[in-house]
Amino acid sequence: MSISDLTVAVLGNGPSLATVDPTCLDVGHTIGMNAAYRFWERIGWFPDYYSCLDDVVVESHAGAIAEMLLAGLYKGAFLSGRFFELHPEFRDQPNLLNLDRVSWSWFQTRGVGNGQSFIYHPAFTTCFPWITTGSWTIRWAAFLGFSRVHLYGFDLTYQEQIKEVSSLGGIRLRVDSPIEDNPNYFFPDYQRAGDEFQVANPPGVNRELHVDAVKAVVHDFGVQGVGTELFNGQSESGLAGIKDVPMWVGHG
Image (tube, rainbow, N blue to C red; front, side, top):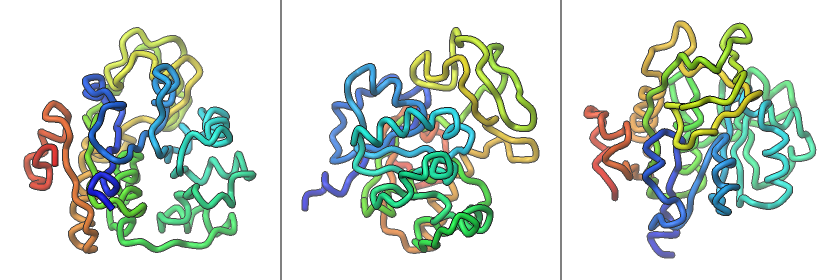
C-alpha cells in the first residue's frame, strides 16, 4: 500500500479554500463537509467521503444528503444522529457512521434511546466537551485508518453578524435572503435563503471554540496514542496562526 493510499485531505469550508483546486490535490483521498456539496455539484467533482455533524445543518440539508447517498457519490459518510431520525432507511448501512455511536455524550443523550450500540475508538476519546464538524471529521479520518491527514480551508474564525441572517431563538439562525458577501466560506452562495444553522460560538462558550476544538484533537491523539499525523496544507489558512500547536508544520 502506497503512502497516498493512507493520506487524506480534509476540506474545511473557510475562505482560504478558494485558493485550492480540490481536484488537483496530491493525496489519495478527500473528505468534505456540510453545504460545500453545492460547490462540488457546480464543478462536477465530489470528495470520497462526506461529513455533517450539526443537527440544525443536517435538518436543513437532509433531503440533499439523502439524494447524494442514494446516488452513491461517497464511499462513506459521518452524520449527526438527527439525520438517521429523519431518514431511518439509512440507519443500517455499514458505510455510514452515526455520531451518536462514537460520541459518548451524544450516545447518552440520544443514541441509547434510539437503540444504538456504542463504538469505542481512541480517536473519539476526549475530555473536550464541544463537537465541531471540522474537528470531529479529523477524528473520523483517523478512525477510517488514515495515517496522514492534510487540512485545507481550516480558518477557524467566523463573523457572527451578517445582515441577511436572523435569529429563530436560542442558537438557531436562518438565512432570510441571498447573502451578498459571505465572509465565512469559500464560495459566495455556500448559504442560501431558507438555510438554517447554529451560531458559531454559542453563549457561554469560549470565543475560540473552533480553535480549541482542533487543539483538542492534537492533544487527545497524543494522550491516546493515535498515530495519525496532521499537517496544515496551506500557509494562508487560520491553522498557520496557531503557534502553540507544534504539529502544524506545513504541508507534509
